[in-house]
Amino acid sequence: MTDITSQTEAALAAIAAATSLDALEAERLETLGKKGWVSLALKTLGGMSPEERTAAAPAIQSARASIAEALDAKKAALESAALEEQLARETVDLTLPAAAAPKGSVHPVSQVMDELAEIFADLGFAVATGPEIEDDWHNFTALNMDETHPARAMHDTFYFPDKTGEGKDILLRTHTSPVQIRSMLDQGAPIRIIAPGRVYRSDSDATHTPMFHQVEGLVIDRDIHLGHLKWTLETFFKAFFEREDIVLRLRPSYFPFTEPSVEVDVGYSTEGGRRVVGGHGDAPGHAWMELGGSGMVNARVLEFAGLDPKEWQGFAFGLGIDRIAMLKYGMNDLRAFFDGDPRWLAHYGFSPFDQPTLSAGVGARA
Ligand code: DAH
Image (cartoon, rainbow, N blue to C red; front, top):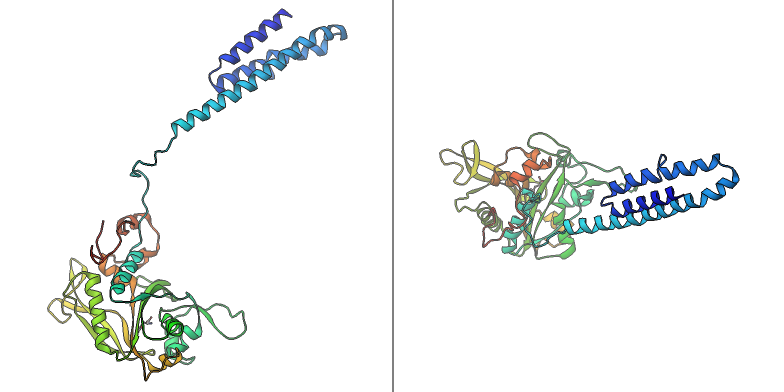
């Protein structure tokens, strides 16, 4: 009996002295573990006569109870001390600079869209948006491309299965031009908007991706003519490329939604294998590069959009955003734009603090 009493006292002392959960676990194994002395003592009860058992059991039971209780209490105390210690150690100082944190960056396409909005806002344009899932009427018909129009076939359109059975084809918009129609129907005239956004065509190689970006421009007012168009685009490109020597050439072309239609070319030269805009395209060492389409809004389009062509005229243009981003920031593979490679993004991306402003320069890099 005194044996158990002294062994219990020694165990309780060891439990009280334990400074770690590991030390406590070792003590538990030595006492209450399968081969611990308390467990072994309990086992001896089975081989005793009833009298012996009645005499011996209470001391062993009470030793087990007091040791188990001490182990539980000590475990709780050690755990809460460990938590306190961890909380103290892992305190976050929110006032420290986040220098070591991995940095995200703003994609060049997003940055260029912000630049566009900044420049055109200064010219009095609002930013309009439209759905990327469009219907056939807004994407084609109202833009003067009826069912038989050959230009429809050229758009490599992604169509959705016709679930309504109404014959109203639903598609991924092939250009931002349907936003012209939506804006005219929504707000009437006069109008001055740009509409940047994603467009989709079933097309994929080094210079084409199934999704790409365009910016549409639309100005509707009284007495608008091609001169306004040329000045607007020239003013935009000078601000965008941050150089005064931008020369544009308007080349006669055809789009169903404009009449007359022109393609917009910019003069450039090649420096170190890289195209640099600026200068007259016919000057020595220079050439012309196409940047987009434009023209005077076709009278039929105005009618589709509920405007009287005798009262209102306007011009429209459409530019490839990815294209002008590549030109401005010197990338050469369009597909890398949409790979999401962190190394590319770290190299070509922008700091979120690098907000384009006209006063600081729309192309300023942090
Ligand atoms: N929507 C045309 C395309 O995606 C681009 C375009 C051409 C837009 C002429 C216009 C325009 O607004 O006037 O190919």
